[in-house]
Amino acid sequence: MSAASPSYIDTYYRRTLASGESYPPAEGPIKTEVCIVGGGLAGLTAALELARAGRSVVLLEAERIAWGASGRNGGFVSPGYATSLAAIERQAGRDQADELYRLTMEGVDIVRHNIESLGIVDAAPSPGIMRVVRHDGGAALQQERDAQEKRFGRNLRYLDREATRALLSSPKYHAALADDDAFHFHPLNYARGLAREITRLRGTIHEGSPVLAAELDGPIKRLRTARATIEAEQVLFTTGGYTGNLFAPLKRAFLPIATYVLLTEAAPELIGEAIRTSAGVGDDRRAGDYYRLVEGGSRILWGGRITTRTTEPRNVAALLRHEMVTTYPQLEKLKVELAWSGLMSYARHLMPQIGQYRPGVWYCTAFGGHGMNTTAAGGTVIAEAIRGENDRYRLFAPFGLVWNGGPFGTAAVQLTYWRYQAADALRERQR
Ligand SMILES: Cc1cc2nc3c(=O)[nH]c(=O)nc-3n(C[C@H](O)[C@H](O)[C@H](O)COP(=O)(O)OP(=O)(O)OC[C@H]3O[C@@H](n4cnc5c(N)ncnc54)[C@H](O)[C@@H]3O)c2cc1C
Image (cartoon, rainbow, N blue to C red; front, side):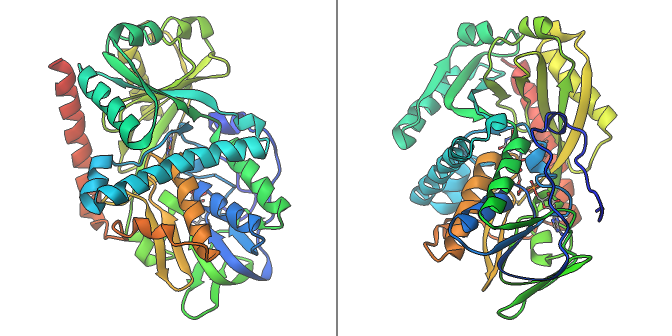
């Protein structure tokens, strides 16, 4: 991690950054009530909710605000977790699963409300996310639409093959479920909007301030960066897939998983032959494709694939491009301008890890590939707990800091993914 002048990696979001403010590295002795380690959307949301309540909060970010997954992701904001409702229900029971799911709907609303109330115009929501199926799964989609309406009052729209292909000219797609309340946005501009508000409310942010050591015993915790020692009554770790060895129980409890995004050249007419919706699109395969039009429909931002190690970007661009072109053969000539990767953190149970490790030591992490709404929910429930208002964070108790399986865990994830890919390919061929 760089100590001086850290910068964002090259992504679409960095290239379209709305504002240029930066925050100085931490220096000297600092005292605060709450110290947050990690300036992604989990840490920023918690910091904002604490600052709004007038609490003294210092947020330390190793690089730049939202330098990690939060500032380089697909930008899809929709309810749900990285695992299915059925899996949550098996572990936590039906009532708790319902409460947990409603919390993720609240997460979507929190993001939307923050954008509106803080006037973050360069992260304005683009409405709509469609989930498409690449096999004949229309009946299951309609059942899901009905169940979601009955259980959570959500209004999803079913699109049959004809309606789906009128918007997405791909021979791969058979039906879709559209969620008009979900949206996509510019996550880096959003994160930086939250940072501005935190400092306006007298919270403190330090970029270029990796925490190198932490003493967490006793009522006052001590954190050390290269040039500062921070004393805090409460410490919150929100270091996501970039968690190092600072706090061993967290490091042991997740697997860093890499995933990838590309940006195409600007070619609005060619792209319009394939994609005729401003909604974001995701397919139903595990670690399937997701994409959306940006810059008024002139470029595609296309994400997908996961690996347990970071593959070279050139290779990634080719792999993702292959996915794009096999889905839309008419885009054969569309060039890739840029590709990048990012790390997500996954627990073995695929649910976020949110809780209190010991008095005054909190963690809020492992949001997997579904973090835009869940970081908002997670950061909020942790702030509520620190403010002593409620213990909603305990909803996550069934999904604790379980051991990630070490190198065996990593190998198992990769093998499972390959098995899923093979099963998905077979399912498509059998359609
Ligand atoms: C390519 C990609 C696409 C994705 N697409 C979507 C999507 O479309 N929709 C969706 O819902 N989710 C998506 N996700 C997942 C989502 O981005 C993450 O779940 C979420 O951003 C995690 O936020 P976080 O705050 O937990 O972690 P991060 O955003 O990764 O932030 C952690 C921060 O901690 C800092 N840090 C680490 N160690 C230290 C230290 N010792 N001291 C100080 N700071 C430290 C890091 O520098 C980093 O900035 C995607 C993820 C990736 C990578």
